[in-house]
Each structure stands twice: as structure tokens, then as C-alpha cells.
Image (cartoon, rainbow over all chains, first blue to last red; front, side, top):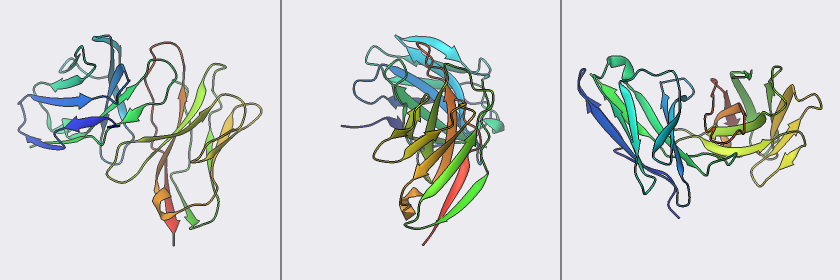
Length: 112
Length: 112
């Protein structure tokens, strides 16, 4: 049973560009969340998708947007990249409720 | 979000028990205590969670103080594979709330 898979694993972009990161949830999970983890810090919640809608959002600007597809997979889009957007982006999936989150191993984004 | 306080780092000898403390003095009556760990170059991994009573699973035990203002994650016999950053997180189980608020966690070093 595959867990949460994310692609790509690494990405290098230039300041001002746009990026799309992808996530496939664990089988049987219907909720996807995205987190940003800067070096040496704990992950920070970006937003959560359930039933193809954004349900919760953390303290991130509108440059960060997402989408969930009918098969529960998800995309994270970041526009107008800044140097400070360089981080590990983690996707987590779960079954709605108090079930544990399952995380992927992330996409390492470097903005130059 | 209610806050947790953990030591920045701890060391333990291999094959000995490890007790990782967490303070959460502002915990609300409905908050569950969750523990996740993050091994190097991986996403966070669920360890255990509980509400009031002590909990055991194949990975660890969770001891919760009677007033719920503190808890301790217990690894019964540490191995080198347990070297990771351990996060203590309070989570409100209201429907649809998949947000986890990570702090900086405790970096556990296992000495061979």
C-alpha cells in the first residue's frame, strides 16, 4: 500500500516564477493538507482540502493556492516566487476526523 | 492554538528507555495530545496520541498527567533508528480540523 507520494522531490526556480507541486494521498484518505518547513523549523500549516474545497488556511499570502481533484490528489501552486519561499513543502493526507496525518517526504524547493 | 513547550535537545544511550517531556499548561478540555517524529530527510511520522488516559502502541507509550498540563512520550528501548526530532502537538478534533501546529520539537540523539 503506497503512502503519500509527492513530486518532484527537488526543484530549483528563479525569483518571480511560478511553481506547481503535486501530491497523491494514501489510499483511502480523502483530506489533503500542505505544510511549509523552513530549515531548522517545524512545519507550518498552509491549507487543507476536503471535497475539492479549501477548508482551513494558515497565515500564508494569496500567492499560495491549491486544488484538490476528484481522485483526492492535490496540487500546491505558488506564484511570484520569493527567495523566502525556499523550503521543504510537505503534503499530508488523512481521513477526516481525528485520524493521524500521514506525510510524504516532501518537495525541496530552492528559489534563486 | 494552545502552545506546547519541549526541551530543544536530549541524548540517550542505545537500548535504554527515553522519556521525552512536553508541557501544555493552556490545554483545553477537548484537545488531544499528539506526538509526531521526523527522521532525517523524511516527512513527519505519527507516533501516538491520547486524551486523558495513558496510551500504548507498538512504537511508544504516552503518559498524561492527571491535570493534563504535561505529558511524557516514552520509548522503552531506544535504537539508533529512533534518532529524530520529536514534536508534541495539541489537536482539536472538531470535524474537518486537520491543522497541526508544530513547534521546534526535541532533537533526540541516540548514543551507541
